[in-house]
Amino acid sequence: MSTARKNKRGLLIVLSSPSGGGKTTIAHELLRKDKNVVRSISCTTRKPRAGEKNGKDYFFVTVAKFKAMAAKKSFLEWAKVHQNFYGTPGHWVESQLNKGKDVLFVIDVQGGKIIKHKVADALLVFIQPPSFKVLKQRLLGRQSEDAEALKVRLSDARGEIKEGKHYDYRVINDRLSHAVAEVRKIVKNERKSRLKARLKGAVK
Image 1: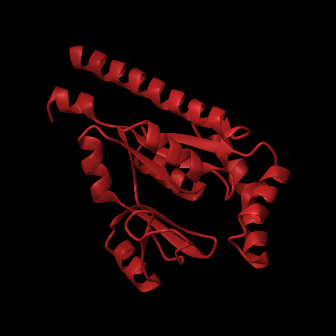
Image 2: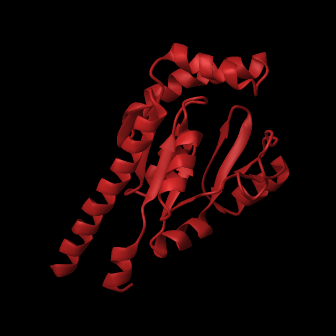
């Protein structure tokens, strides 16, 4: 690979939070404001929520289809979360990075840890709610889960927040505009520092 192409390689960005933590909203804002960032689309076995579209928000597949793809090692990462499977097709991601695009993953901490293990220079950002009480209020206000599913998500959230301490950065989502600005600043600074490191390495 030429020096020019190596220097052009994009960032692999992982954005995680507990359910209701705000990762999806922040991701939408980042994608809207930064045209060099593209979202990685995951496959999932869960049912679409209101307004979600196949091929745009997720690739909605059956459990059998998902397991067949996993057996063929088609996923960069995959995990079972809240009783459903989620996984990211790897070929498309690599092609975007080589074009210089930053690929944004909006996934759970399980997926984030797997990606970091496979891609050492992945940038992991954890979106943390200001408190567990606020997180519970957000989930209740969303009204997208029944009582049992809500209980599972709240239980899982405690472990996810603990795992978030191992991410490269943690951003507290108290005010959405501030959280978005902080994530954008992190991405901008990482681009500069990594490009500088690549150029320095190319000179040697």
